[in-house]
Structure formats: C-alpha cells, structure tokens
Length: 246
Image (tube, rainbow, N blue to C red; front, top):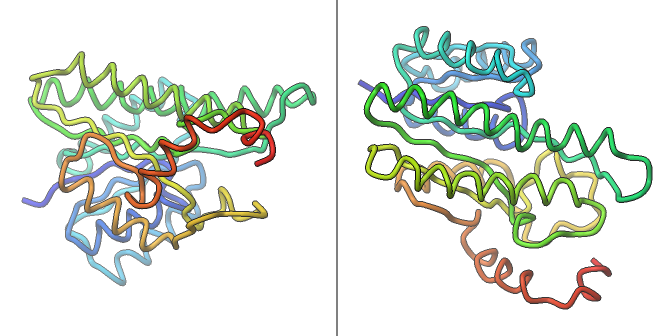
C-alpha cells in the first residue's frame, strides 16, 4: 500500500509543489489549508495530472489548536492512515521592530511556531499509537541568524528547529523519524516581493529536493543543500554591522 502524507499549507508555495511531487510518486494525499476553494482546484488538478491512489482535503487554520487535532484524526481516517506529516503552513509578514507591527509579530508566531507545534503534537500522538511515523517540519535558513525586518519570522523558524530537536530526543527509539528542513529562497508568494533573493530556485525544483530528502529520512538539511549549507554557517559568524546592511 502506498504511503499517506498529511500536508499543511497545501494551497500555495512549497506545500502545493510538494503535494504535486508526492502525487506524481504515488503517495496518498491529505491536504489542509485555510482556503478550501483553492484546495478543491488543486485536488482536481492533481487528479487530472497524476491520479494518486487517494486524495482528501480539509479547510484548516493551524492557529486553532483544537481543530488541528480534529483535522488530523478526520483526515487519517479518510485517507486510510498517515505515514508522513509535512508541517509547512507559514507566513512572512515583513514585521519590523518598534514600528507598531506587533499584531504581525503575534500572527507570525501563532502560525509559524504554535501552528507547527500543534500539527507535530497531533502527529506525535498518532504515531506513538501507531508505532511508527515520520514528522517533517519546514524551518528556514532564516533560523540561522536574526535578520533585520524579519525578527519574528527568524525567531519563529529558529524556535521550530529547536522544538524539533527536543522532539527527536523525547521520541528517541520510538520509531518516529524527525526531519528539519531549512529552505533558502524558493520562488513562492511568501518571498516574491523581496528585492533580492540569492540562489533562488523554482518551487518545482524545491519540491523535488524536499521529497528526496524526506524519502532519505535525513535528520536535517538545507534546501538546496549547496550553497545554503555553507551560507548558513557564514551567517552565524558575520559581524552585526554586516547583517544590519542586509
């Protein structure tokens, strides 16, 4: 039987591209996002292009923790079981420190960190009962260093990475794999307004890399691996004055 994958933030960007890539490879799909009308269109297009063994959709706002657990249970039953969770839902609102943008900061943390944690907690409970599973979280190269004009975004992605490290330790020897991914600039609506996007790759290439890393069950990796594995290390040691000019 093919593997079932649950994807949050599946209506656009990385989540949408990964859904198409996994459908092409024969996975069963459970797709969740806030915009159900968009999900319907994506479901229909995936069916036309790839005819996956099964595909179900559900409207979901990951900031509603109770509904995250309800959605997970409903979709696991509808899909006939889930093997992989791709916690991908995220926002980038361009919040700035001391500019009255705290509502943007709150929303960024609620979606990127708390929403992802709720998704992973639901997954962990399910996989502990099942006896196996794979939890994949989308952090960012922004987790490597706090950057100007995106403090909350960087904090949310760094917090997510640390949470997943703790999860890996807590679930050690429970047959639950944990993968933390750190994408660089992938061409999606999340970042297409930025004036500079170094080492940019398109969403389809990003999805192929991501699915390959998931299938290898890597513990962590940048996306693409090169050059961000090197750039990530450099970001940690650059002087603050250099970072401030970025």
